[in-house]
Length: 145
Image 1 (spheres, rainbow, N blue to C red):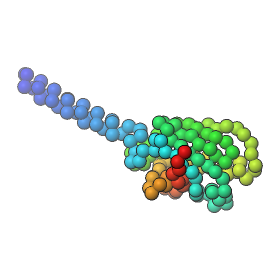
Image 2: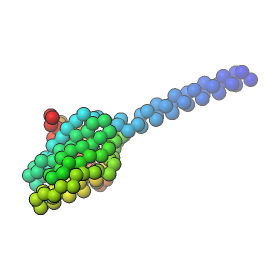
Image 3: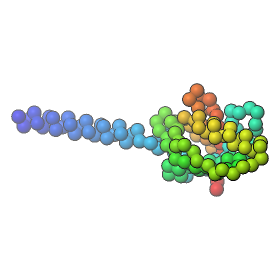
């Protein structure tokens, strides 16, 4: 009976180790590129009627926080990355200042595209946020503070 108990103990221990590795491997923030501590400036977006570079739009990632400056208002929330370049964020909150009509329109476009982002990739100093259809919706260049 002790040999049977020993085999069960070894099998249980092996399964626990494997399960622990799986849980750790799937934890948020374990995506291919770590965004923590990075700062970006918008250089392009999928919207064709407004030029993205006509407005200063930024995004920064620190711990689990996403913050930035839209054409008029500052904003923030939480975000997470995961396997397969997954990108998720909480509902973004923003200040409620009014601005020029063109800047407010650009800001609405930016927040709509940011809400659509479900994946990301980082390559050659560029951050691309991608929607569920696989479209590159927002393109940022890395900046220093």
